Amino acid sequence: MVRRDAFSPVAGNLSRSGRIPLRRAVSVFAMVACAVFLASPASAESISGALARAYGFNPDLNQQRASARATDENLPTALSGYRPTVTANADIGRTWQETNAANGTSSRTVANPRGFGVTITENIWNGNRTINGVRRADSQILLARENIRITEQNTLASGATSYMNVLRDTAILSLRRNNVEVLEQQLRQTRDRFQVGEVTRTDVAQAEASLAQGQADAFTAQSNLQTSIANFRQIIGIEPKNLQPARPLEKLLPRTLNVALGLSLVENPAIQAALHNVDAAALNVKVIEGQLYPTLGVSGNVSKRYDPITSPGSDVLSASVVGSLSVPIYEGGVVYSAVRQSKELLGQARLQADLQREQTRALVVSSWGVWQNSRAVIEAAQSQVRAAEIALNGVREEAKVGQRTTLDVLNAQQFLLNARVLLVTAQRDRVVASYVVLASIGRLSASTLGLSVVAYDPTIHYDQVKGKWIGTSTPDGR
Image (cartoon, rainbow, N blue to C red):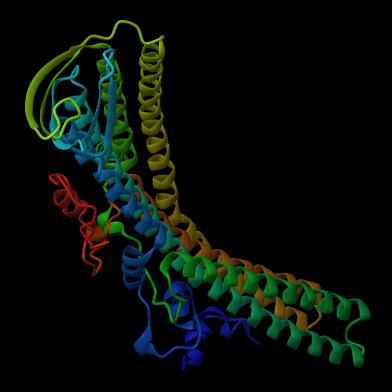
């Protein structure tokens, strides 16, 4: 069971005195981490454990890995242009031939012609389409690997965000529920004072309205928590239980914004993917242009025929080697159109790479600003909580001697509640912002975070299939 004092620093004692020790208020997440559902301390979930689970089992990440494995097959497909094609054929039949000569004689021939043969065809030169196709396949494979990194970073960042959202929304729900308890007590006290004539019916109505608003806010907080739990389940793969506090990744971040920007241009996988896409598009132009060049090839054939109709009862063995040259003259304009189209797509890919650089730069600057400002927001929220506690205590004491109204007490209490919600949110934002900054520069990975996982290596499957000449089974046996 979760101890009651695990809740009290955040919400358990927005109480009759309205005071919460400041030394506890400044460490909100450490207090609420044990408040996510009923679970034993031994089953506590850390953010590293949650992200490790997402790294291994997230469906979006695994489908991207499967897509990269499928892209690996582009290389054997391209390499097939270097290899011969071999076909075998066989046939069997029965023929009848009857001849009637002018002199009145006739003859009949019955044969069972049959035979078999093998043809081998080898490409010698095809306008460099094969070599450029192989290079294009390599660029496509590198692009697919960068897409894995993009999805991995997005999954880890989303996992960290969902983890912190559950902690935040659990704390806020606890604050809201505790506020309802305090408002209920406030309403009872106000009604008692109304009975003895110390306050008016207006004061009672104000307390009732505040309680109704507090209950509505609690229901909204509960709905928000359920949404965060659903997102956690979608990304991590399990229900959150007894989440531990998490810290910002400050030690893993660059020291300055300029350093972060420089790293992002080199290491961000979205930029690298865009550059590989440019390479693939440029090579695609060359592959299509190769269709306008001559094609040189050689083919060999060996066949044997039995019982031909022209010479029943005999057999014929034949063999041939033929070189061929094919020169395209005019293809109706389809190839020229394809070349022009591929050049436009190349220009688009280059513009996309430029756009991706600008988008990455904007993301680094914005996420860096959020992370840098989050510390100031937390300090301001802590000061606000401290001041709101003092103000609430003072208003309550003044209300006892008639210098403050019930509305003043309710307003002070609501101000303190809002300050605590702001503090919880600010601490969540600082942790999330650190993950976003690390992702924006391209360094949010399982190895960087030190997750206890077996790192996925896309080169293993690549090495298994790149040299395959034959076979329909995948390396995993399917």
